[in-house]
Length: 373
Image (cartoon, rainbow, N blue to C red; front, side):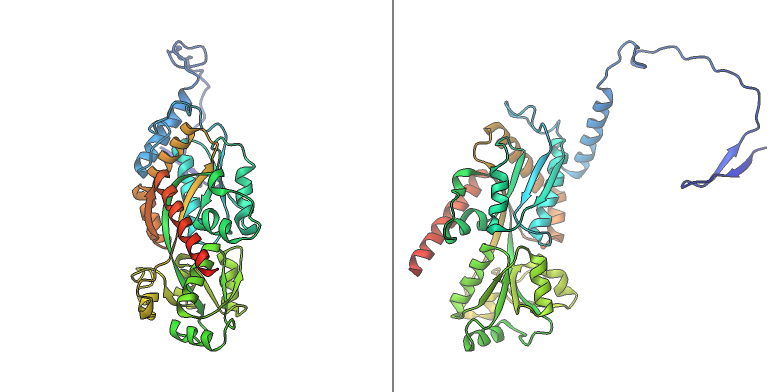
């Protein structure tokens, strides 16, 4: 008959209690090949092999390539040889930042190495850019790219002294994000028309927060098309900008839709318009700028996100990173995450397509600036 005693500790349960009996030594098992340090067929790396197999199975379920599955170009067989840094030129709180952290985590799984996300906001993206350029050109430092860092700041900031397009090599283009103009729920403006009417009546009386040169460019496009002038206030990230809108320190904010969405849904912010050609599935009741202002029937503004490395990075490493990142962006897992992270348009473009996009936007901005002179 078995009796039971209640075990103590975190795994409390019932365990059988056997009667004590005379001790009897068990015979030693004979050595078998592959067992024990001196057994015939012993392989020191067998445990690592099991771990690699387990990782491969995990990634296969997630729809991502494992390190073994990832094709290794000649010259990149030993990459990565240390942790990879994902440098983010903004503070936590935006969909772009959250999406980049997701990509960094999956890249680490795909390459069998840790990828550490580092927020480096401030200095009009120069702090993040200099962090990349001060790191070795070996692919172990990746920078989150956007029109702000690749196009807008170099052309619009007086005294900018870094030729970004020569010193940074694009890897992939990930997504394109829609912007929105939001005010506090306590604001007297309930529509975009009302806010613009106030801005026309009292130029520069309405303060609008933004945290990116690209969003500032989009806000200026909107202001120019509506023939109004805003008083713009720059922030390092979305979180503080939105906090100040809610608190009344600034009147409005122009930023990515995902950063504002939770506060709009909770009733703390009111979205006046979105900048995409059609309404956003996340805020279907909010009109587009085109709807709110029929004169702007072709208004369309969005911000793409991509990734890059130092231009001197060896080509085999560039190709490996490009391939791994594209596999992540095209995976069902990332697409599912993307739908919950503001649902930006998924691009998943390669290095060549992102380079062309940067060239096109550079020429467009140069033309815009020349027309203003």
